Length: 375
Image (spheres, rainbow, N blue to C red):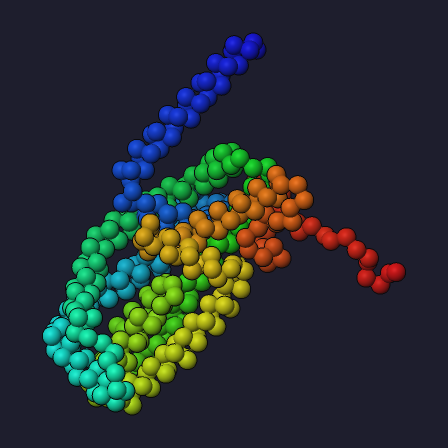
């Protein structure tokens, strides 16, 4: 091939890449409202793709039948319960009658008594003027999320079906376009799977555990609609920093405003040491069991992901941040002489082997040293 032909081939290559980028940006712009559905389907695909291979390779099911069975499984055991809980919370919260003026009067009376005992001002009416607006904004946000949630559930089902039906072609295409050598492709597959499993499995388990302990506390301390507030507490586990405090602190203050000082103080103590303690212990154990991911990746990943992807940002926010750190570590490992960086985000020892066609699982490198029992 002549030099002129090589230049022409390179020019055509970059023109094609340019068209792909341009069309990709156009498609992304118009499918942006459904991006949570695509990401949710990708998340569920990672979790259930093993079942598809088992049905088609071991049980010799047709791909269409296997994919349909798995989609029905996801619908009845994951999406419908999640949708039902979401509608329960929205319906109950929207039906609550709130009188902001009465709440503000009670709050002011409580603060006046507290300030009288302490001898200085804590709050002023100007500082409390945002309370009525906060309640209406929350209800409006919940209402606007219903339509998007339903549409993205439908998108998840359709996309997941075709991803499972064409799983071999899908995985082959991903492997072909990854600009890494075989070892790093395997590492990327392992890390991605572990991170998704840690968030997609760990976060719901954490929510269920914390919601259960919260329900026991709310029931014991006489909170009306304890099951509703327990569900809200479970959902609030995805919020970084504040977490479940956004639920049990206002409930405790409400009891104090109503004159029930014993239950109010007891609920605040219970929330701090029991609900908060369960959060810390369960989060630590689940993350260590599923994947050893640094807590800062989860916290800042959620902060990044929720504004971008909504509910599924809880999973894909930490994933994006983890992939950035993974690519950074890969660059240091490959191209910086003398770098001690390992091309990993999770702990290497706890990485589970992921079987991917055409690639062998990466084995941890053995450290050089004396063999035990010899000198």
